[in-house]
Amino acid sequence: DVKVTQSSRYLVKRTGEKVFLECVQDMDHENMFWYRQDPGLGLRLIYFSYDVKMKEKGDIPEGYSVSREKKERFSLILESASTNQTSMYLCASSTSGFLSPYGYTFGSGTRLTVV
Amino acid sequence: GQQLNQSPQSMFIQEGEDVSMNCTSSSIFNTWLWYKQDPGEGPVLLIALYKAGELTSNGRLTAQFGITRKDSFLNISASIPSDVGIYFCAGRSTTSGTYKYIFGTGTRLKVLA
Image (cartoon, rainbow over all chains, first blue to last red):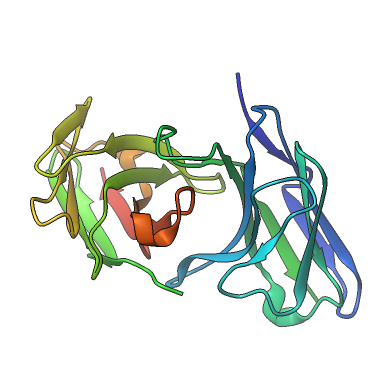
């Protein structure tokens, strides 16, 4: 069964800590994405990557960075966690091109609480 | 960043009722997707649409690709308690890149037994 795996379902971190959220996919997908989900705001794109070592900013990159050293792994980094980064974080992956019409495969999410 | 307008934002319905929700865009899309997110989980793909006017079913769910290519609709017939969750639409066009989808804000569905 193909999947996207996020390393933690729940995390509680302190303000100012550096936080790493890990995501691994086993589908050999080129593209990987990090979203945050907040009530009433839907899914907002933080960063995405279309190849190893490549990254592009999404709509809300401030306070975040990413790393993609291997094709299957995409990490989201909160450099100095703040309470307004308390949220549900979703990782997703997809293949490239219009011939791959099945959208994104999502992980189960990491609910991060910053105290 | 661009988001799709999805309505209603939330709805409470009685078990057995039919449900309708829709999604509109200011851009023309060539692919529309509908996802469902169960509480505490990630979204899962329900239906994909690739052609204007296309009508596709998945069990009790039916989705349509609007003929203007700027909207899409999802209907759920005879709702049951496990239909509870958040339903997202997503669309893609040549202007948004070949791999990046734009998501709606979600419709939260609650079913009263």
